[in-house]
Image (cartoon, rainbow, N blue to C red):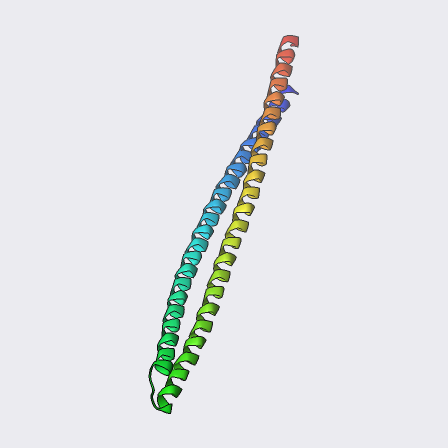
Length: 167
């Protein structure tokens, strides 16, 4: 009977080792998840940088458009010219106003895209933290299982000693 106990304890240790391997694989997968989350943060940061560059470009467009408006106003009020020149100046003003509208749309779109990327990266980090927590719980469960297996081996050895003494 003690021999069967030892065999069962050995089998239990093999299962514990398999559990350790699975736990290590879980940790590796968690680390991969963390790397993926970090890559997501990098990508989101790149998106924010691109959005900021887009905002700067849009602001430059607004400045140029405002400059165009002032030039057009100067052309209207500062010069006494033919009706054709006034019409051209009004067209420049209207085009500049349209450029401002387009630049503002670009700014809002860039900000929205950057925030969406950052939001997705934060959710990825939260999921990795939960996965890592589950892996750590798995490691503790494996340690408890190993402790129970060692106790089983001790009981089996004790039983074998009793069997040898009684023989």
